[in-house]
Length: 305
Image 1 (cartoon, rainbow, N blue to C red):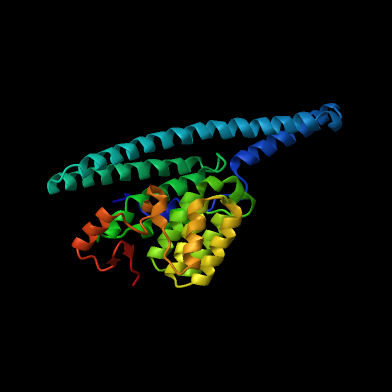
Image 2: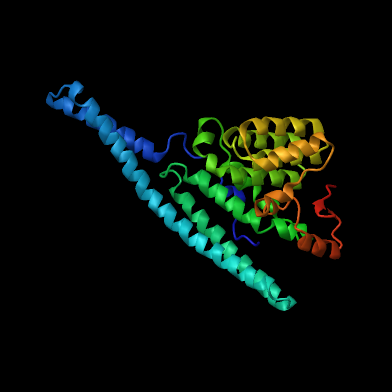
């Protein structure tokens, strides 16, 4: 996907330690508490009203800019849905020229969606959590538009997704609040795997994920898959054993038994949610990649250089 931007890091920047919304809320609180005392009103009577005014100020401003960000998200999502519809129609057409035209149309719409999402960064200092969420969505969009192209021998632009996905990762108490972004973090681990960043970096991301998504057997199984690919079978078994204590996912438990018995993981049981990561390909896509003579494909699994 061609992305029209000057620098990836232009929009992935560190914001102020305290957001503008918080500053204004604090100012409103202090003014409401202190100002009446100049007219003889006891501060004992102004503290609670001042706090209430501060909270109300924060909520009103946050909601105002939240609506602006939501409008941008909706417009971007329309472009993404349109791009998906184009590709779905193209998949039913065997004409190469039609498929190329569909691919170009999809790339154009996806690029527009990315640019539209970037517009939301202008509100990131006003709306709590918007910068993290926008980075996650941009990173996932870039990822989804490149992962299968890379698998089929076309130019890999997954590196373009990494700065955004890295900016979406939060830890500590914020990770629990934003745990819904763990799918974006999972794609960061995939990008690290594809770009050979190293298993330690992957493990760091996966530990963040399983800490907040303990009940998600899929996350534990993917973690184990990375370890198996890095020839760390004992660690993979340990991870699945940890996951089995937290999750009731039957596939996770099947995979644990498989590794303990010296058999391969059966990630295909997860269906589309697994294929969407591009770590393995469904048979029809795998056959196509093999037919193209792609050097990194072996069977239906990636062979790392």
